[in-house]
Image 1: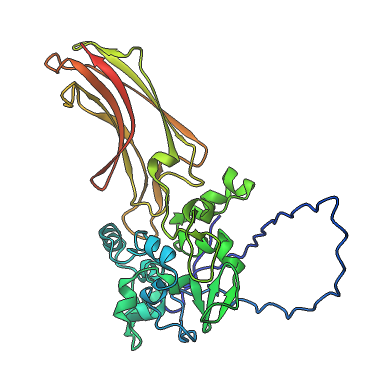
Image 2: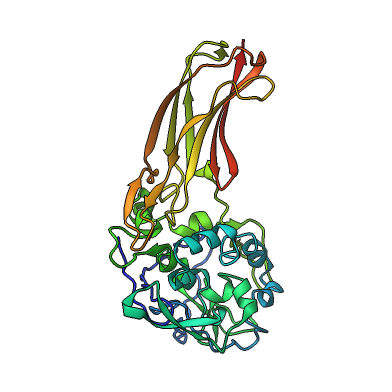
Length: 389
């Protein structure tokens, strides 16, 4: 699914509406209990409608501080909402602006204001705002100073205010009169469509969406089963509470990891490795745990899958082999796709190779290791113990 952008201040992104219903269980009445008295129905005032989170433009303008809220900084939320705050500080949202990987991708994309629209989604986070584009070229904005620039909010990236403050109100997944500030219930916060605002982006003239995480999810079995983005990426923290709340609180940092998303299967003919003799290896990777492609998001995100044969001393018995999970695009806008061999949700990829261990390797307890490399960091996916002879 592709959602084209319209450009108003910095960037205009689509809002996709979706509903979300919660089923509630009922306690069974005891058979011997007398029938309860039927009370007259009580007319409750209609619930105050929640403001739209994203009405069509990014960055959003938030010019009213809710009563009872000290400031728009995430630190002001920390006193009561410490579970959400503390998990958020460990999230990609918290580092959305200052993360060096983003900064490198931002530079590769020509420092487009399109990128800033999601990594700094509130207007006061920008020291300059775009007032149109030269010849309609999104890489050539007419930038003007922003008198409302807030450096503190800029440093917080995608923080509480981006999704929880609108029109002088705090938006939550439930409403209560015990909050020290105006609080309204927003069904949008439960919907995966909310995530599409930033995790679905089509560059004008492109053959495919630049970001297609939401579109990938829509084509997956997760969407058909009703599994929303937050069900995996904002799972409830067991036993966490905050003032006035007895229910669990959603973690605001994704608990997902690559080894949760992938199932790694290795086939070798024997548990014994003979030095100097070829060892055939078959590797099967299954995207069994992600409701989108692996990797997903911007096309600058690649995983190098490495298969390594180690001796008893942990040294390589043969050069590593493997392949990439990547989507590559042209080097300039509109970033047309040149290759895509990622793992879509529910799909698998099989690879075969052969290792001839050096005769000088240390005999004893060795291993065949499958690992993923990204930005210099290694994630071990599978370790098969092997005896080296």
